[in-house]
Image (cartoon, rainbow, N blue to C red; front, side, top):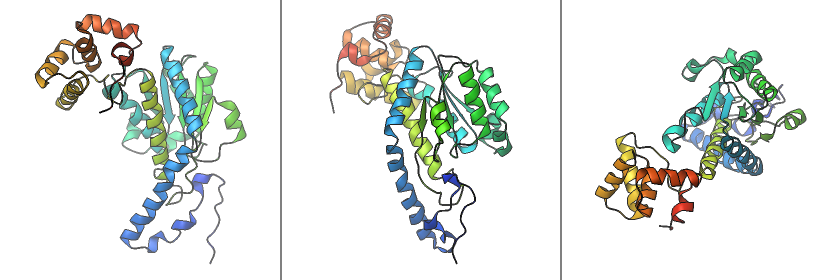
Amino acid sequence: MNAPRSLDARLTEQRNPRTARIDQLATLEIVDLINAEDRMVAAAVGEERQQIARAIDIVVECLRAGGRLFYVGAGTSGRLGVLDASEMPPTYRTDPALVQGIIAGGLDALVRAQEGAEDHAGDGAAAMDEKNVDARDFVLGIAASGTTPYVHGALQRARERGARTGFLLCSWPSEALMKTHDVVIAPLVGPEVITGSTRMKAGTATKIVLNTISTAAMVKLGKVYGNLMVDLQVTCQKLQDRGERILMATVGVSREEAQRLLDESGGHVKTAIVMASRSLDAQEARQRLDAAGGSVTELVGTLPVA
C-alpha cells in the first residue's frame, strides 16, 4: 500500500519516506534513524552560508549604529530566539536590550505552549510598536514553515517603521518573501522524522543558524580575543575561574595576580588583559579599549596559538 501524499505544499509538512515505519522499529533502530536524519542538518545549514554571512554583516552594521537585534517567532522558533538572546549578556557582557527575543504569547509561552498565539498578525505588529523598533534595528523573523502570521505581522510593521528585516525558515521561500526582506535564510533539512514536528531537524537548524549569527557578530564587535571569551563579566564562581584562567593564559600571570587584576578591573577580563599588557590602571585601560572599538588585538597584538 502506498503512503498517502501530503496535502500541504510546505516542506516542513511533508511525510518522510525514510521514517514511514518508525512505529515498528526497535528502540535502538529509532535512535539510529533519528541520528541519521540529524546528520543532514549541518549540511543544509552550510548551503545557506552566504545568506548567513549577509545576516551577520547586517547585524554588525545595525549594532554599531546604535541599533538592536530582535528575533521574532512562535512556538519552538520563538523559544530558540529567546534562548539565543538571553545568552548574550552573560557570555559577551551585552546590555540585555541589545539582542532581544520576542515570542508569540509572551513569556508564558516559553514554558507552556500557546499555539493559538501565532495566528494573530496584529499582535506581532503591536510587539514592534511596543519595542519602538526603528531604522537602526534589524528584525529576524523565525518560522520553520515560513507562514506564521504573528511573524509576518511583526516583520511588516518593522519594515513600516524603517527597520531592516530578515526571515529564517526551513521550507522553500516564496519569490515574494525573497523580494520583501533584506536577507532570507532557508536551510532545507527535509521532512521531519515525525511529520510536522519542527522542533526536531528544523529546530536544530534554527539553533545552529542563530548560534552562528550571534557568535560571529560578537566576534566582529571585538568581544572575543583569539577564540577566548574576554568580554565576560565575572558574576559567579565559574566565571571567576574562567576569567582567571584566561588572564593566566594571555598575559602569563599567576593565579594570585589574575585575581588581583580582576578585582581592580571590576571583574572585566578584557580590561584586565589591557591593564597587564600595557601597565595601565583600569580607567586608562577602559579608555584605550573604547578608543579601539573594544578590540584587544588592536591594543596588545595577536593572541599566540596555544
